[in-house]
Length: 226
Length: 267
Image 1 (cartoon, each protein chain N blue to C red):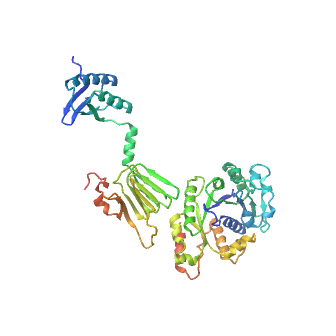
Image 2: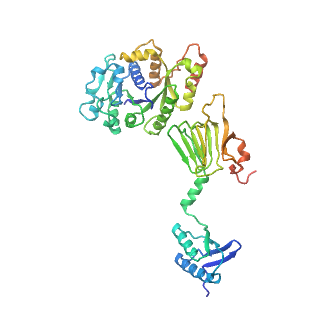
Image 3: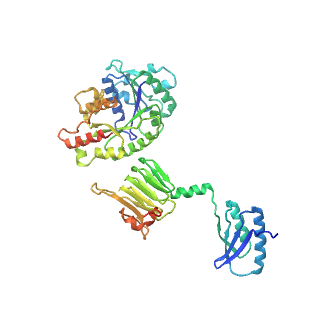
């Protein structure tokens, strides 16, 4: 009986696609990959650099193993690994991924000296007092008064927004942009239902909340529905 | 079993010691057995405000280091018939002389014999503050209508809310100057209470009599004719669970009054 191949190579117009079987052992896979690449390489000794995409199916590779495979492929002169694609991720990665997209609801007052940080979006039911900080990987929505500091998109998300029922922040930060509040706020300025976002000129703009409907349509998470 | 109430503020000079002395005095006037505890070790002055300085023999540090018994260190206030006592702070050492556990133990012991233990907290958020709140069941935050005082009070409230053994803190707004509040040169009472969003237990107007009284070692609460005195007496009654509307700051200013009353009635 002919043994099933663990490594199959396909050529596409973007480069090579290496499909690695996910049922065999890792050692076996490595050996066969090395063999296969050595054979094919002889055929095209010289030439331009070829990008390789590696598909590993339902196999989980640790960071070290990924590096090992990359080195192995890279050794074959004109091959370079573009990407390793796997269908599986660890629980931790999955949790982190979910946390990044999750809206965390918090009901309290963030007082001076307190810092609240969430990986995803923040929905705060309460105020942020001067000297208090709220930081989120995603958007920040505050259903009270924002008088302290808010930092949205803290991992570098330029599309993140900050919205508050009363926006009187001492400082606003979105991604790497910064905007400070006016030195004097007269009490007749209401600042109700406002939002802050980064515009094309890389500046933080404060606008009425409704502006977001057009500016950030992807804030809508509702799928399907009417 | 008594109640231990810590009087704190974060910022210095807003009137913690004066407030402690007067709440203690007012509670004693209501017939409660009260012990004042000065935890401002190294910078004691509750004894001065109470006019008991020259009677101090032992102090708080002597008690926690077991150099004397609690009752030996307590200074009795002659103006009250065995109702008001003071446990003075030490003056020769600093705040690190006492630990939070020692304070807890001390307050626990005092709670056996007194209905109210009023703890005067030092300014700041360091060891002295931690010691002062360690044994307390309740906290009263004193604030003046200044931005800096409100900011520090906010910080203190945040720290107090983290203490699981304590009830939510309550607020006293001290040194209110009505004409400045009205003209907008001072923070407005509504602004303060909204910002800090904790229960208001009393307001005290800025009164020269308070300074005079403190300097004479006679807490203002003993003088029945002063406005500040009535304010402190009302605070004491609210602590005892009575429901008393806030005093109007000015007789003519009815609008403000009803607004305050409304606010106070919210919780």
